[in-house]
Length: 408
View (spheres, one colour):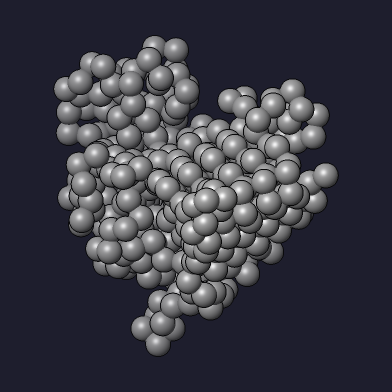
């Protein structure tokens, strides 16, 4: 049984601006050491799926560099993780939607000639054994299987919702319905599409080719193909809550986050730092793979209690190469090579690589991109009125400082 994974990584991620000002959304750092795309790719690698094509488009240099330097597979065994830039094989257009992205790259499918094709997005945070979804797909002899997640029925109008029979066969697909149909067996919840699909190769080729003929189409899998696919093919919904990850605790089951907004991105990072996190990066039986570095270990220096100059971090993730030099870090995620100088305070923050925080600075509820210098005595996240004059603020009041900024 041969398979091919087509990973859609071309989104611009405009709602994550300014984090996506110079990079594609899947390349945005997450959880200290990782990039968002690492979670999708790790799911495939941990599931034993080793043929992956990553379709890129907007601002892809950072993503391409990360993949080429990190995701090097064993070519001797026919394994690969290859980036495919927008080829414009069908004309001069960028991808018009997710279905069009596959259509413009059908040569990749026909060259590999797999029995089944995974079509997954690259910009969500979750752990999933995709082999279990494939087994479900094969057992049902489905033409298409859609990964779904139960959500409260009152939130169903925010998602693409599937109405399914008791055995999982899809009766209809509804895009953000006002009155979502309940899932079988639980009237309080409905089934939201996760945007992850398995197609038989024949069905995939037929559907995206037919869709390409209609100029009025949105050329999107959810809106344009799944909305009517059940009328001409066997479509099933795979309940993500049934997916079993080795070493995963009960609280983690079904964890899936669309980090499409700055507030969602911030909260997903905060999910990592609890004593018993609802998303656990420390599960050695399902590792999240990323690049190796030559950074030295993190260092905590000064234990001068008299002058309150103590380097310490509590309820935080601190990556390699960080130096906490007489400052305090609390409930924060620090990427490699962050320096927190004496008497500085970092509270409820996501801090990316190579950031320096000066003496006596106070930084609260902030996302700080790479290569930023916070000067001594700066106050960030303390006064919303002043913050709004200088920085980007999210709806919930998170301060966001772009890459390379020199804060006055």
